Length: 196
Image (cartoon, rainbow, N blue to C red; front, side):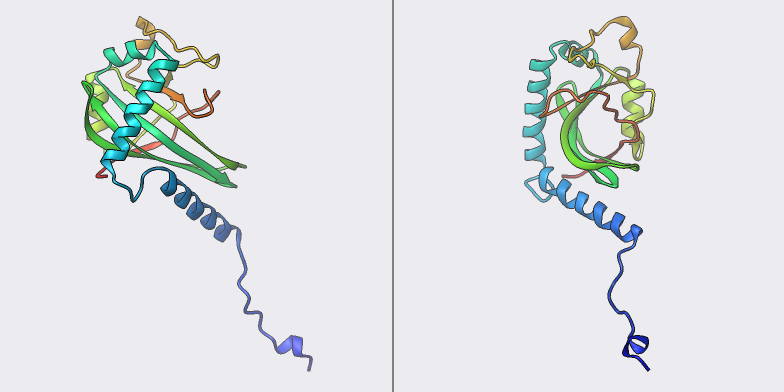
């Protein structure tokens, strides 16, 4: 009898599912390191929100008009998106009404398909109607849909707050450390109220 036939293979095998779970765990750790998780909480988020708004108004001046006409804004200063096979994103931010923070939120997004790498970016949601803001605040896990209107063009210009643009109940601006994210979308991003 050969020693190979009686030996049982006790070495662990890495399945595709196990590999995907390891990737998501790594994403969670990466997101936690860069998004203020386990930090001073509200103070860190507030400082990042203030810096993000200053950058947005400086780089895309027409967003100030949108801000003034909106009923509320959700500012997500730092969203970390990473993927190795499967991908996901995580970030934390604040909801402001009349320039005052009223709640804190997290955003998460899971995506499939071939993805490798990581990036960080900021985004702001402008709620242009009372109903849109009320629906967002009342929902238990609001998800961005395909009908979201984006207010920064792929040339880096911000779209003016004209009548047609303002007809959309929720508008979005996506930008970040590497400048404009061309073709970026928030579709499928889920937002939940948090206590930092």
